[in-house]
Length: 323
Image (cartoon, rainbow, N blue to C red; front, side):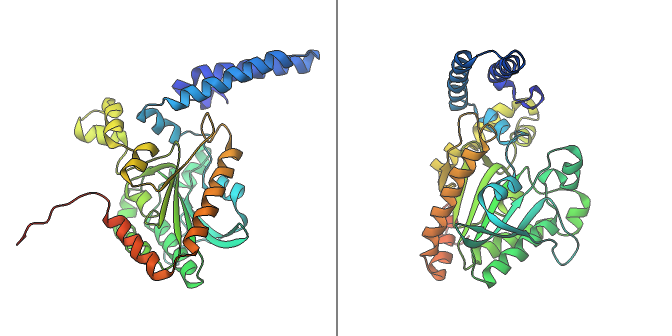
């Protein structure tokens, strides 16, 4: 892990990683046997990672979900699925690269995969708008979902966005309408649907890909109506209160599972998904295969009925006579 891409609470982890790296370089240059030293340092690193990541505060969980080295949608598509064929455009305005989608195979079965995509550097982030879709991105996603429904194929969505883009152009082209339409149409799809929050799931920009039969979260992903910074600015008029906001929002995978928002939490290796992407992808691939197999056994009418019941059961409300 480079020192430029670590979080504040990972400082001790990075120091040991740097020691291991220097030791290996020295051994390679001088032909020394450092196996025993490496074994001790590696064991120390494993213990430290496990302890650190088992005791994260909610705000630290937010930082992990946003980690710049965390795998993104295209990484999971490459690591879990085969025969990926990307489909572009909303057939109305343009192709929004903040959302990618297309056909792929999982367990030798054809599925439609759609997800938010961030960039690895400034150039790519500008092209993908930092993973914040315009309305044409959501219209592309809906076009692909309807295509999947036409051919009776499941849909898998991968959620990782700070939220929908709030710029003037996006609003002029119907951002709110595009998100609302996706919510309605996803609720009606007569095919199995699964969403996975792989990083940060922010507000309606995330929910527009999240009205599914099953909602899975990676262990260190977050899912919330607003960012902690945004919540703190509104409630306390200061972003300095983001720790308090993160605690109050109950946005971690543990909270979301307890609240009934998430159906399953997929464990990440010690150190998070970015520390061992292959293990994370193996675990997520197994979870997706298992859940899709279960949903495939449910007929279309029951899928829709149970999906509606799932979302109607979230939260509470009170009705009064004559109102």
